[in-house]
Length: 170
Image (spheres, rainbow, N blue to C red):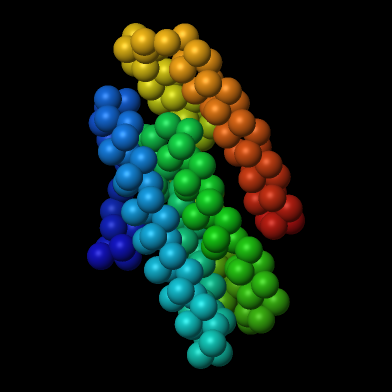
């Protein structure tokens, strides 16, 4: 079912995230578990000496991370980056084991993902909607300030993750 889902357009229902943040957090835990399935699949294929198939499992993990971020707020994107990292790091170790045709296939798949990459502007726009909603319903300015601080920390993490992805692509 996970692979079927990756063949279809994906998006987090932004309005649902904005109005029901607690449920969205539970869903993020479930998404991390699904990502774990792809990690295990990749590891199994590596143990079976099938590096090309393992690489495709890790590419699917990168795609999964990107797709699960669309339409979401910064927490969705952070979870997506976590999933992408789970795919990028083992993929970097497998690339030298691939022949030219296999490497081209992986590169083509990564380019497709890059074309549909979730933009930071989209995340910021959705996050602003969420913050406005929360601020309108906030009972304590301190709670709002704490949330703002967490968002700033996640933005720093996001920028660091983008730097790691850039290094891998090089």
